[in-house]
Amino acid sequence: MEKIKRLSKYRDAILIILDCLCIFFAYYLGAVLIQDSVLNFSDYYYYRVMHSAICYIIIYETIFHIGKRHKSIIRYEEGKDYIIYILLCLITAFCVSIVGIFIRTITTLKMNLLASIIISIMIVAYRVIMRYILVNDIVNKGVYTKYNDSKKKLLIIGAGNAAHEIIKNINTNFRDEYDIVGIIDDNRSRLNFTVSGVKIIGNRNDIIRICKDNNVDLIFFSIARIDNENKKQILNICQQTQAKVRVLPGIREIINNKKNIFNSLRDVEIEDILGRNPVKLDNSNIESLIKGHTILVTGGGGSIGSELCRQIMNYNPERLIMLDIYENSLYDIELELKDKYPETKIDAVIASIRDKKRLYEVFEKYHPYLVFHAAAHKHVPLMENSPLEAIKNNVFGTYNVVNACDEFNVKRFILISTDKAVNPTNIMGATKRMCEMIVQAKNKVSDTEYAAVRFGNVLGSNGSVVPLFKKQIAAGGPVTVTHKEITRFFMTIPEAVELVLQAMTYAKGGEIFVLDMGEPVKIYDLAESLIRLSGLVPNKDIKIEVTGLRPGEKLYEEILMNEEGLEKTSHNKIFVAEPMNITMEDIKEKLSKLDNLIEREEMDITKIKKTMKDVVPTFKETQN
Image (cartoon, rainbow, N blue to C red; front, side):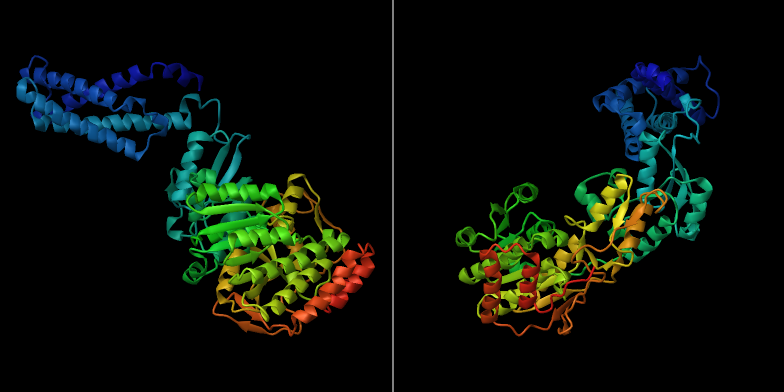
């Protein structure tokens, strides 16, 4: 590298000398080809050829300096740069021929064009050679060897344009960090072909063998356009190696993030290996309800609430109101959306759903058309220790929002519920079940259309298990799982929100929509997958520790209650549970019992749970 640095200060002079040598040689060779004989130095034609070459140099160098082509960094030149060199050479040839009209000692257009073609070939060729020398650091090849122990052995999956970009980036910037073992591609006709000099050495069935034989440290999954099932299968194979896996996200994510291919590579997320197919939506129905209206989202700074806000903005609301008690997360989503949608009215409102007076002030000021109610206390163990807080926020907070919607003639209200409301075994689940009751009862006495959408765990949400596992792995373990057989339904945050928006279009009032969560996932298996995809071995590099079920936690979550039926909607992932036979009089009686607990500031958790069982008959505690 030092040798190259010493030469770099003479760079411009070296390039001009090389250009001049190419031009003189090209004119001489062109003359020989036209004359079909070696030129005699005393011949007049040789004199004309040299005059033309000198004229070419003057015009060529002038054009190149005006166009600042000598400022182009050879290491980073590519196809379009070489095309520019060829075009400029041809332009120079025409300019020389025009000069020849006035100066008889200049050669003909035929000679100038032939010489220009030879010049362009030579100029491009020496730049390609120089680029190869610089990129591969051939000058200092004694310093680094191809199989330097400090390099990470890298296997690339996918032989498309993304692989080409990754290899180019590595060769240009990270050659001393990575040693590319080869490329995997399922197209058998490509076997033994090369991409940017790297050989295609097998298909997905060869991944485990190749990783073992070559001690592969890293796998780059570079296929952006692939169906989820195939992606899942290949990543499951990668899990059986000891290599850390990084993946290229979808094309839309790459474009939205405006990053190059190499910088778009990210760690594998658990949703990559779940293999869930994208949700298909009827966007026209969603837009007809949102476009041009004022939309309110409670809990707008939370995981679900903030994603609701993002997706609502895709449908052109007149105004978006984001209400939350926690200012930091609300501020973040406000900045994000105002930057992306500067023309839309976006209001971040700090308020608690427990505060009825403040809530009514917000409704009176904005008069929302649709309300999405995502504000809630949701952490099961925390709510077991603070049950009154769950009741105040989840039950009475929801009751306040529901009544405000009725008072201010909201068109439609959607409650974000949970599978933990089904045969609840904890305070949090019981309070959410009570919220579902309030929604169905209120729908019977109001012009507002009330509905609830119930789904399971969302990947990556605040407090969910996946971010916790990642932190534990990064800290060196152990990864803690409460039970080896515990299972949960999982859905990505965007997928859950998309289905919430779709369910909203089906609501006529009183429904509890149930989302198809796919197959339940064993949490222990999920922990093992995350460890393997980090390039580590479960219970060897990172220990998995079984800690025992927590208070209120059950092994298997349910989506429907025993007494509920299930009806299909026109969307294959959305179903409707049979409505409960409950009235507002029943609700007020139940609320009165809960209000007595709050009035007495009841601290006896056993008494609180006994009252909740009376209010929510399906609430049954687990015996841990």
